[in-house]
Length: 64
Image (tube, rainbow, N blue to C red; front, top):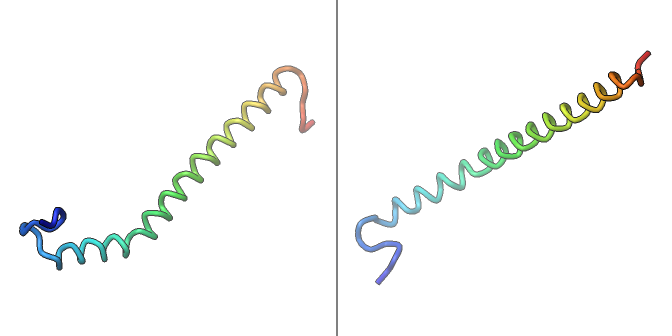
């Protein structure tokens, strides 16, 4: 007995699904990388901004 193909789904639908997955996997991977990079840049920006404001309000003025 084949667990993955028990008569309800023919092989062409499985092949179509796999080919669609292979087709769109680079796009999904690229979107994931862009999303994670955006989150990282956001975190870096707010960390740097917070450090700058902490120094600024403590009396240390970096840019004049």
